[in-house]
Image 1 (cartoon, one colour):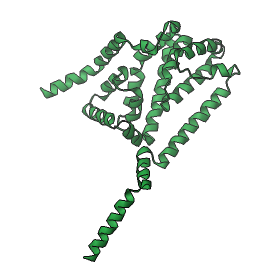
Image 2 (cartoon, helix red, strand yellow; image 1 turned 120 degrees about the horizontal axis):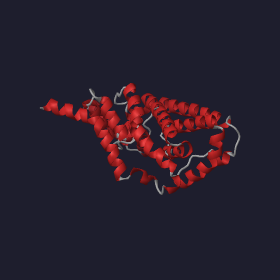
Image 3 (cartoon, one colour; image 1 turned 90 degrees about the vertical axis):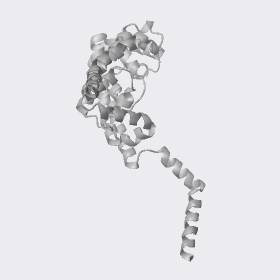
Length: 273
């Protein structure tokens, strides 16, 4: 009976070791870091490449009052001041300004940095509706695509850690709508059913093909972009960002989204019958 006793003693020692403060700290640290070292290094490398490219573009632009124009607005007051400072600069150096604008927008979209809604308003204030919508949709689609590929590389542990329940729900909905996946993705992009950041990160994880993701993003972002860019024309009258999406606006967006998802609902109903 000696060997079992030794095994029991060893197991008790292992259990006691697992209960030590050091072991508990290790477990807590592992639960807090969803990325492996390689994944974290890859993310840091991609971020560094984007950042270096962004600064190279910005600091090779024509000299101006950098302290006034090289800033990202965080509220409507900042945006109004920035718009006044950029008006002449954007007119005189339009091509280089657009390049810098797109670079900042894509960078923020790729790395989920909040504030792109202010850039969309700025596009309307500086370029008008048509040019502004084209600029915003191009930048937002490019940034979402970059985020898609970045998530495909390192995003699975991060999304599973941040939104486990939402990810399972999204995966089940995608599985049920494989035959008309484009309709469902268009619905999600047009309506605020799920955050765009989550869609960008979770889509490659639940095996949404990039062609469908890209087309749904390109087309689905147009209505919301139009609303935001058009609001930028009357920037001085806008009191809050929440005013952009009142009940009437949300109703219109859901109505447009329902038009795209209706064929999927109709087909499911016929299948059950």
